[in-house]
Length: 547
Picture 1: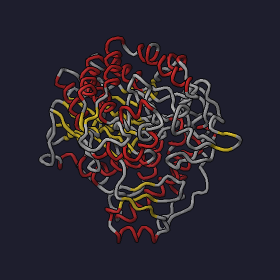
Picture 2: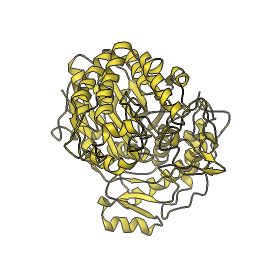
Picture 3: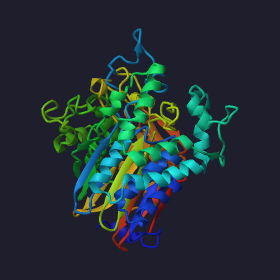
Picture 4: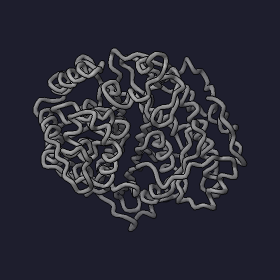
């Protein structure tokens, strides 16, 4: 096993039966409770995910989508794409009005949402590898929604910044704002009776109630009355997809990631592939940041051009070809920042292709089941629309398409034709749930939240553990940096220290200093103690627990 694992004993509590790490302690507790009721890591993951939809609804919920990566106790790898799909009536120029891009329409209101995939993906995950029933996991979450919970500082902050947009939609305002229109404050009780009723209806009737029944009808009626294009037929036609996991190697470990329409799996693999030739452990901090940043730039330039839904656009497997990565690596100057004018061209770009705001959670159990699950409604509170009578916050994943090729989205990411809007298509995502194996055994489940920084956070956590020998807690606490090619800015945490930042700047990087960004969670196996060690990002309240 990795050398770092021997250092974990005594550093933090490890658990022998199972472990859960998420962005919210109430959600983590729900996952642990599922384990205690006889469930496995898959059940724990879905319980955590459903509870996050209650207590962390500004980030994710059943009105959004997810990617689920599972390693079952028998060694089976399963990859579920629960990404939202564009309504059938969507088209390339949906957000172009009189030749000009309407930047708000893809972010707020009835045109911003894709057909939610999270609930269908949860159901499929449980059918594949779970022990408990979906109803067993929905009902405790429904009870929490019914009774209410005290919102934390992060929830208050999101409400405060978005109150004016939430006021545009009466059902959203009625639940998330006070009667006078002011946002709830830290410590105020958020009660979600409609969401509780929705969860209970799904528990009683199954996901058909959501995709073929009452919820789909209510959503379609609201959309039709408010200028949307999503229909009940769009809901009825939704299917989660089983994808082939992306399998690469890094320093003797197997890196199992998400294939497209996740860009995360491809680019974590790309960047690690470039990094493997660098002596990361021996490099001084400034040189290490510089070299990894240059690799990030090259990968994100490829993202902008090549990545999209593989069912609609050819996404080259050659992006992770060792020879291509060697060519990219050769473009990195160890002494200074190098401009990246455009994407690279991998081998056989049209012939060898992949087959047809956010939160992450990781779970594992003693039987050998491991899960990495990342889910989202995109930006905070998604489209800001709650479908009346349901309590469900609808996503704004349509903004993850290239609303107009070359135009940046909410995260300043640009895209090309491969990620253009089309009916039934899944938008490109940065979500990067990852499982790491050593000698065929799982040792790490990791992923993150935070738009395109998800990719950087995930690969840095992996490198911090594998290359630098950090414990999970240390790996997530370490300062971060991120470069996404466009804009040409190195987002970097000030915790590196001003002297280090100045030295990095002297290499030609334009810095975007940050007090802190992202939210990364992981579970790691401690070979020294034979326990599972969960860790949550210290930049957020979070919860890491087990039994």
